[in-house]
Image (cartoon, rainbow over all chains, first blue to last red; front, side, top):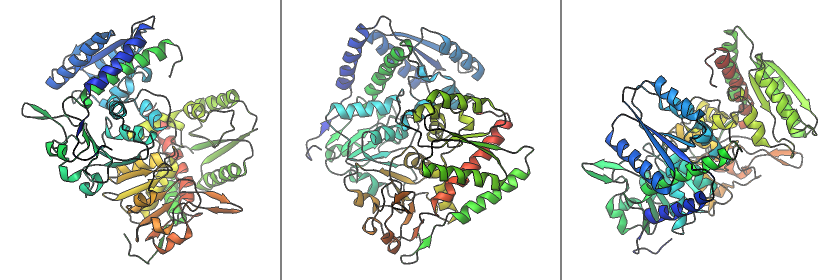
Length: 287
Length: 287
């Protein structure tokens, strides 16, 4: 852990760029161009901007990328029909349905409809189950991005006390699996944890993934700890994380919002797309 | 938590009997008799005795139960052929392959071959993934048994500090999912945790599932804590848990080995068999 007072900023962009360079080299050796297909329903501004970012980065990396935009009123059956078509399309390597989906559509049904070997978001239950069973799988993007971010800046999690605040399917839980696999002692805390301060102050590495602006105050952080802020909260016009700015005076390292974990999530999505393409076209099918 | 000095013994048998009574009543209302099919390979003495116990309890409860014993030399292909046949057999509700399997057979391949809706051990990755995703699934038997044991003796885990020592696919990890779902703050510790004592002493509820005889000493237990011993270790002729006998003088409650979690595991297996039968024959298929 770095010494107190010398804050290291865990910027995501250089880490994402390093990964893009690796992927670029990998792509040069392939006889095909992996293809990502993103589906968006409705015009939620955050979804519009996320999908645009993913599409742009995919193309910049040299992948094929296509976006299907469906109206908010699309029925679940229509969405499932599109997913089945993409599942069957030999040219499509990665399928991502941008969440949240409209209320009349079941997220669970959508996730289970995507072929596991094209599930580049790593959210199909069989990918989640393989992750927890220690098997090869497509890993959930944000947690995989957090691991790579820490690794890039030289932080090993083995033998460390890692505290994750937030137990979402998207971040907290799969990140716990990855941390555990890397030999961290892992604690999952959440909104029902009575004495959150006592728990977070134990952390050598503290991950804030609760989705509550400014939840983690400086008093909750052990001096010198590494703090990863996964929160993305809109406060007025601003994007802020789950970590209060005052934590910068206590932590040894801190990932900024925006610019920390965010770029990693997109990079891991594209990494998953390349991985999925190579595996599937290799005919060493994962089911 | 009970007061220090008054040790409550968390006996599994009365809890298992209460569950059997519930299942018995449930079976009386069915037009069919659920059927469990257990496959054992080779003559490992522990496996022989576990399988006999499961078969006997299943029959005692009034289920159909069949055991196929194959020689240790059975090929993976032969085992998979049997599993496919059991998958397709409309009369078979639950399939269990007793682990460990011989070294020339891949446990992963065996687990993934079993139809998820007949996977009464709850170890197929899709059941693991559904468990972690908060969806309906067949839950892994021992962890489900631990939850029911605690519940029966009046211990709520919500808001409690739960420390699980051991990160196996069979116990530690799925138990963390169940504890988390019930609002515990959950820590997974393991052989690479540097200061295990500091971690275990935080626990309101401490679960020992490392598979190391006597690992948990009294100095590692907070006075009055609830201690669940999932360990089953053969020391000479004796079965002993992961918890040192001295812990009885410190803990507020302790599950014995044998006679604590063991009976619960078998009971949950039969409960899963009934659940699987009702769901599948209901035609509300789970895939």
